[in-house]
Amino acid sequence: MLRFLLSFLFLAAVAGTRAAEVSVIPLPAGNLETQGELLLPLDAPVKAPATPAGERAVRLVVEALGGNVRRTENKGGPGVVFEPAADTKDEEAYTLEITPNGARIRGGEAGLCYGATTLAQLIAKAPRDGGHFRLQCRTITDAPRFGWRGFMLDESRYFAGEQEVKRLLDAMARYKLNRFHWHLTDSPGWRIEIEGYPALTTIGGRGNEADPEGKGEAEFYTKDQIRSIVRYARERNIVVIPEIDMPGHADAAVRAYPELGGGGYKKPAEPLKWPRFTYNPGSPAVWEFRAKVFQEVAELFPEAGMIHFGGDEVHFGWGGWSSLPEVRGLMQRENLPDNAGVEGWFVRDTASLIRRMGLKAGGWDEIAAQGLPVDGTVVFWWRHDQPQVLQNALQRGYPVVLCPRRPLYFDFIQHESHKSGRTWKGFNPLADVYGFPDALGLTAEQESKVLGMQACLWTENAATTRRREFLTWPRLIAMAEAAWTPRERKDLASFEDRLRAELPVLRTGGVVPYDPFANSPEVTDEGANATHLDHP
Ligand code: TNX
Image (cartoon, rainbow, N blue to C red):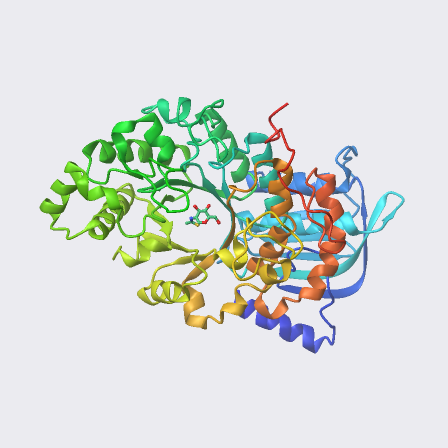
């Protein structure tokens, strides 16, 4: 790809053509304007291989041309042709060539769809002239900077529901994002049906951040809904990564099955908000639970290749653990000196179980200190105030997903005037998201271990759809470009220009973004009643 890009840039220089800006988000890696225009008829023929990717590519372009236009077989006129490229090394790469005779897209499976997405954006912005769209001729040569371009949604603190998630996946696909990290379990609520443990959802599914004891209705995804969402994501080249958090953040599961409990949260300021915060790491009942849950989860997410098991915020052992007989037995058998040793053992044991299932074990950056094998582990760096945690993980050779609180936690505010949401010696404005990860100053060698980046929306502070979307957009568009576009092509002013034209597109899709140009009013949860779209 690199060699191809270089020769492309060389040709651009020889031809004396300046690579002109193109109204596409994320900005493509290479864009060369050429002579002439393509007059693309609304009923242009659109041809593609009869594969799922080909069919999706056709649908994207036909929709952009006006989905209700009847397609005639005007074989002679200019049209759109998709060709699979068998030789491509990066299956997300594509080229899009627009000439007066038509548009031609070549790429791998995902590449064909990304080429279609790009062409659809160009058509949407092109002037329409009678029965034609007028498209400037150009050659776009495109591939992503990072292979992991993700978004994490916390559905435990508040449940979003199928309709909102599918709308999110639609918007993610538009900006070529390809990982949806689904935080399905945490203290307030357990959101995924598990047949072996039905009370996880009938009891653990009740509750949210405002209802820690679970007095409300159960809110969760049935297995059929999960399958439907995974399929919907797949159709948009998005892989869904399930997270089942342990050994902490366990209250909902322990409310349902008290015998799994290992003791609660003892933060001085919130004495016992989460009295069942941990699993009992020495209990065979917990080990059996873990194995059965993971088995069902793995079946539901066949393409994930990973189970993310959390591993966060237990802080090297839980005070109460050493009073549990099962933990004392474990300490003796495994020769573990203290609670920190017990936590380390549990993390290693959980990761090893996941690897034996043929999957990678994903976890928050705490796991990088536990001596897990480099091959079967993916570390999610979140503690922005601890850059050495990232340095160490990279040095040990772990593949890392970058998702530091600053600037990638979207529960942080995005404008200094905003009152609702987190801050930490600053906040997370659009420009900081866009500038990431370049501000980190990673070496090329370090960057080669970085799988990519993702934004995380934690929802303690986001009870409603409108609030969640206000926090997500447009920052997620900035992240999408930061993760896709080569560093040397990134330009904040150009991005903002293109973003201005994009905000109305989001609104058309029903998403109401924060408008950073007009500093639109802050959307908070105050006075809200319907917490998600599925509610009447
Ligand atoms: C830290 S990120 C957490 C979450 C919170 C979030 C709030 C992480 C691994 N743990 O449990 O929701 O901060 O910003």
